[in-house]
Amino acid sequence: MKGILSTVNKLLLFLFLLVQADLLKAQSQKPNIVLIFIDDMGWKDAGFTGSDFYQTPNIDALAKQGMVFTNAYAAAGNCAPSRACLISGQYTPRHGIYAVGSTNRGPQNKMRLKPVPNTEELNPAIYTVAEALRDGGYKTGMFGKWHLGTKAYVIPKSQGFDVDGSFSPPSEAEFSSTKDPKGIYRITDGAAKFMEENKDRPFFLCVSHHATHMAIQANDDMYAKFRGKSGQYQRNVRYAAMNAQMDDGVGILLKKIKDLGIESNTLVIFTTDNGGLPQSPQNPLRGFKGMYYEGGIRVPFIARWPGVIKPATVNNTPVINVDLFPTFLEAGGIEKPQDKILDGESLVKLFKGNNALRRQTIFWHFPGYLDNANPGSRDQDFRTRPVTTIRKGDWKLLLYHEEWVLDGGKDKASTNNAIELYNLKDDIGEKRNLATINTAKRDELLNELFKKVKETGAIIPQQQNPLYGSKASPSQKKKREVEE
Image (cartoon, rainbow, N blue to C red; front, top):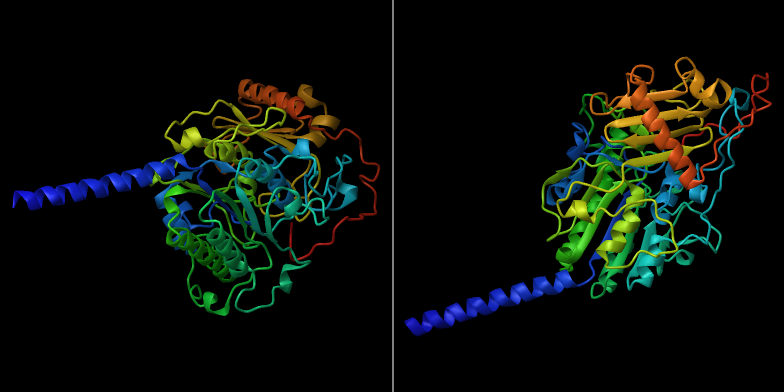
């Protein structure tokens, strides 16, 4: 009997050591990195962020398996600039992509300043996160929405991706298939195939969905789930169906990671490119995509990394998508290029339970105009006017350049309405402007803002617009269903 027990104990010990060896091997390897990047999904558009209407069971499960960042931001209020920030690791002034199309969108006779011109494609000289990871030994793949240029020298294959599965048709209304109107399963299938082909080597996979951007589309059977249902603020059945179908795609992708046996050595990041659509209220946040109030830039953010990130944890540290470049480098054991400027900071220390970052502020700069004012806009003509924004701790300051440049600057700060100051801890809805009440905090953040302006080379528009106040109102963009 003792001999049998001894044999069993030895077998159990062998199995235990074998499992431990596999775990140590996995930890010593470079982790796979999967970035799930959703288009126009707002901070309140998921169950785990508090929606009582949308159904996102797969994303919610991911949140329980990893770390949820409650103060996460996109580095710009709309698509192309945010994507440029993520892939370059740099704030908007460094790459010059501020908007989709031009920065003078809207009635030009209501623009007091001439905006800083926009750059519409990523400079090929910029060293991207995909190039850095590829140079560090990763196989790189990108599937879905690119939106940083269509010329040969700026497409994903020219910017560090070994495999380019991107597609961006002229109009998303052209996704006519009733089975896959947003291309969700096309993107997911391509990403799954890439992982299967590269499961035995470290890979970086960017899964960049067209959903949940307009046009609002989903399979017919998805709509039935939400008919007759209503939430406190969110009630759009069509958007809910599209959101649910996107969640289904996320679930298929996560299951593939598990089925391939690579879950324990894969860092998964889930986030979005900017705030939500007007069709999907973001209460209690103010505003929507294209604005620099919280509803336009605060985004869902989940990180899952088994063995590194403790499941079901919450982190309240302010983070921003330029942090992903240095995060991926540190996770992959790759040295930061000494000759490259990165504005973000690695989040790996936060993943490991340390709640402090070195930096004190995060920063946004938009020197132009975006049309199609929405609820929460500062005025009825534009979603936003030229503005620079900074957050430090619980405090956030927005500096509007029309009033600052033309109406007396700091000397007239008590009356010119150039500055908005909010304490986000007490006023996440940005309803109470404290700029004339807490002048010490206002001046502190204003000094920090101008330090960032100088550091990044941000150009503040200074020239008056000669068309301002004229009767004619030429617009650079006709209003269309598919807003950018």
